[in-house]
Length: 393
Ligand code: PMP
Image 1 (cartoon, rainbow, N blue to C red):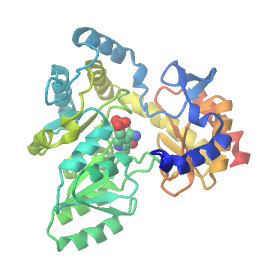
Image 2: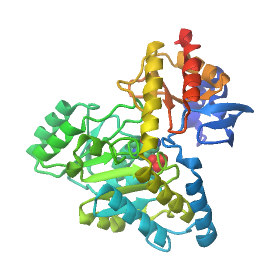
Image 3: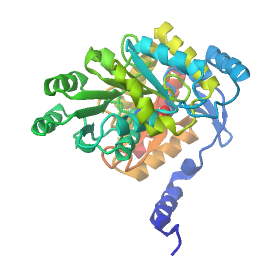
Image 4: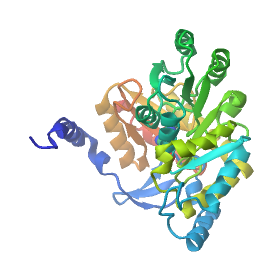
């Protein structure tokens, strides 16, 4: 028996899909021209499938800060945060994130995925319970698997289902960590955080909110959904990533529990991987400054998002429940979604195609993500491209 035999079903599925999907499995960004345009297969396309919500990956100051840091501190740390991988920039960024969120402690991790692995595998342990929104990101599920707490899922965005489970758990007198996201990445819908925070307080649980898609995007100051919902005081742990609105790579957890610092010593995903490069830390610090000083980027992002959501709704696409910078068109039929995805690419628009099992309802999603740098004319070109393909939906 060959070690790869078990991959045969996967290979067959991939082959069957490749016949319908055209370029899908071979997308290479041959050139990235800006936060909104790239060259794919020799064709200039509008990038409407990245998480670069504020367009900061091409911000001049962020790039400059990265260049200076690379010259001064080298291309990488080549070590764990626990060993030689904590540079003064890492510590400064942790301080700046604490200040931004009004919290006492922050840990910077190498990616958002690692931040979730670290938190969920460490902060709760044997005999304790994680109550998880069923649509949470894979990194949250993987963190649960790495740890040893019991994991119970509740129905997506359903506080009634959450309460039922909290009530049952009361008898067990154990610690419970509720885990939700702010803005959900698949359909762009918000968590009902006011209700969830009230249940957390009522049942004496802890609450972790992954604000990966809401940092810099939601809230008067860009602190995410907890800020917008006015419940930051009930959120014990905010997890986030640098790979979306901050335009770099890395992750963090911030909290007002001073014990957060102990996670550094107890968490394998913190200890056993190299820390983020100095250039990345430097541009992230600069980007955080931009989030603070340029709220107009956030406003521009929402203007565009509402414009495109309305257009696609008028064209008859079945969308996520509310306008957001993630605008997902939903399809029961994967073949139709592939046909539209191909058509969009031919018309110079790149969006993300999401296939089961990554989708919430077993269908396919064409997930269009906007950023603050998309011009009105680009947004209208995206809308026109969808409109010209609606007969295939
Ligand atoms: N959490 C959520 C909700 C995400 O969507 C993602 C990335 N898609 C992550 C965490 C992981 O972030 P990173 O890309 O920094 O690993």
